[in-house]
Length: 392
Image (spheres, rainbow, N blue to C red):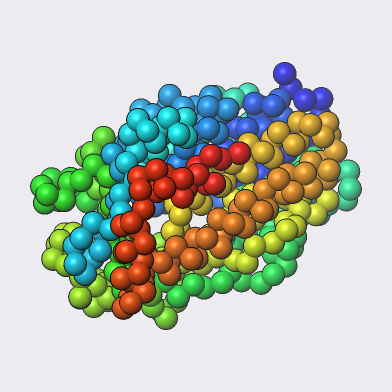
C-alpha cells in the first residue's frame, strides 16, 4: 500500500545504506526519490563481512535468498599472530554459532550486495533512482524539503535522508562538526584470484594476522573464486578520499618483520588501492526537522568490527519503522530513530577504535592480548560478540 503523501522521501546517496533505506521505506509504502552523484550505480571496493545482525535485517527486507546466492559462509573467524604464526583465537561459525545467533556470518563482494539491493529497488514502483545528481545544499521550510544539486536542479520531498557517506554534505549543515577524524591508520585493499593463493593459505575462514602496528585480513569471495586482502598499518600519510593507488614499497616496509606467509600473500599483489581510515566522535543528534542522516554520514566508524555496512542496514530498517509509526510526522520519526540508534552505533564506533589498538599491539601488550584470547573458551568467545550480533 502506498502512503498518502504527495511528495516522496528524498535520499542523498546510492550506496549500500541509501539503497537499503529506499527499499525499507518502499516496504512500508513510502514513495522514494534517491539521488546518486555518480553517473551509474556501482559500489567501489571489494569484500565486506556480514554479521548475523545484518541477516536479521535481510529477512525483514525479503532479500535473504538473493544475498545467499553470492555470499561465502566461512568456517571460522581466525586470529593469527603475524610474528610467531601461532593461532591466537578462533570463533567457529558452524552449528553452535548459528544456534546462538539464529543467523549466519558471511563474506560478500561489495558489488554483489549492492547489486541485490539495486535490483530490488529497480523492481519497486515506489522508488525513483536518479543518477548524476550530487546534493550540495537543502532547505527545510517545515512542510517540505528542497534538495539542490551541483548542476542546478532541485528536488522537492517530504523529508531528506543524508546517506552520502563519510564526507557528507548533509551532515555539514545538520551537525556542522567539521571534517572527519583521521585515525593515523591506512588500509590497502586488493582482490586475488584463488589459484594465486598458496594451497595452505586457502583457508575457508575470515583470517586476521595481527602484528605490531599492522594487520592483514584475507578471506574467500564469490564461491571461493577470489580472495579479498586488506592490509592495514599505522602511518602519518594522509590523502583525502579512499580509492587512491597504493605504494607497494611502503606496504613492504610496514610489514617487513612479519612471518613469511603474510609476506607471501602481500607479494602476490602488484596493484593495490589505498584509503585513509577516518571516523568521528559519536553524537546523540544527527537530525534537524525533516532532515536526518544514515550510515557513515551519521556515525562513521573504523573497520575493525566489520560493521560499517551492517550498521547502515540496521539504520535503514529502524528509520523506516519509525517513519511508518509517525504517520507523516517526519521530524518526530527522525527523533525516535536516532534515539533507538545512537547508543548502539556509538558503542560500535568506540569499540572499533579499541579493537584497532588490540589487533596492533606490540611488546608486552601483544603477549597479554594473546594470553587473554587463548584462555577463552569457545562459548566465551561467542558471547564476547553477543551484544553486537544479537542485533536489534
